[in-house]
Image (tube, rainbow over all chains, first blue to last red; front, side, top):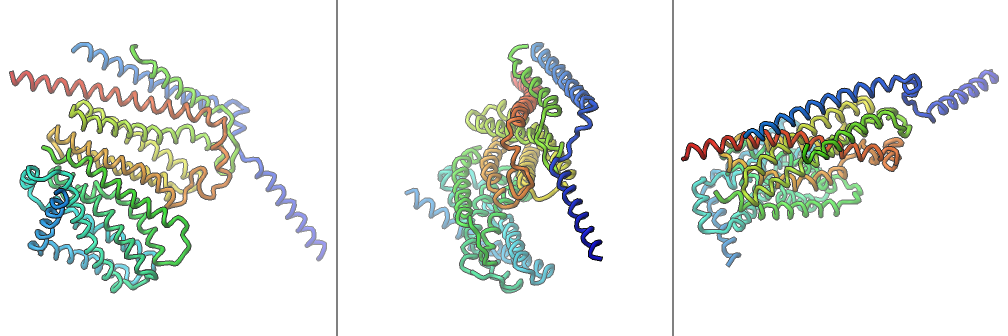
Length: 70
Length: 218
Length: 227
């Protein structure tokens, strides 16, 4: 009886330590970095941004043209 | 000279109010009906809710009573005033008048709240002081907004739209200040908050003095 | 491409903030985890909004001083683009908060402050919508703009003292203070703010130019018909 209770205490303590060890390093997307998948996300975002900028430049040129025609 | 003009204008507004008693009684009835409605909805609520309901009632009183400071005058009459007084005096007179009106109506609202919704106030004097400051703050802001609304198509609904976003933080400050009179808790920055509120009132008045002449000219 | 160096700067800075913001090292934080990178994308929306509203405020003052309707056009377009950025900031903030703290709306003073800003400027647009006379509309809305902006700034400053915040450095947020001082994050954050502000300015100038063309055209018509 005593032995088993002692065992439970040890196990729970170990479990708590294990939990703490896990918590001390917050999880980040390390896997995505190691297998390079984050670059896909960057590429997608950069493409969208480039598209928007190209569109803005086009509008800008058009307005400049109208301003000159007057 | 300037002072006498100011007092004359304030006197004129008070006399107008006295002669058109029905509008003042209308505001009183509005306050009474609002408090009665709140009572029917909530009975005698706990102190914190009491406080919140009181300040919301104050906001509605301000929208409905102070709003008419400019709206009640016929637009053509402004042209007449324009020829005889300085805009700054006119605005200040309206602000003083609506502060007095607001303070009077607030006092009645406070009394009604104490009678109908229970009396959780521990420090009555303090609460009255906060209510007085609150009346000034709400009155000056809504007077200026009333001037804007009067120039823009005379629309009373516009005042609520323009004023609510500005009044929200001010009501938050006021209810925070008033909590001290209800629950005797230690509040560290109380005086600082009070000074911030008074500084805001002064800012509103200064902005009003600077901006009102632009509204005034046609 | 005359005077377009700042547009180039805008593109470079935002591109840098997208690439650098996703790839560079950030502090490891509990609860936040990778979402800490949202700082580079969500917060610049607020800064852009406030800076655009400040621009609108300055043009409102300029309008009242000179009475030139061009300034009124500048003021209202800057306000509209500012509202656009405030919507983006609000939505991104709610998304971030939903997945980090579990609720999209949590009485946060910065969120409240933005909600108040948005209400003020919606009211500004409604005020303008009700007036058809151009001069009168410009004058009254400029007065309201100056009045509201000058009051809004101190009120937003007071708000955090009224309610607890989830934002960095406020309240009891776990380990959320450290990154304020993190040089690695600053190196991306400040360029991102500047880049997004320039982008907001660019969009505004485009719409302003269109509106000015329309304005001049209408005025020409009036001048010609008077002859």
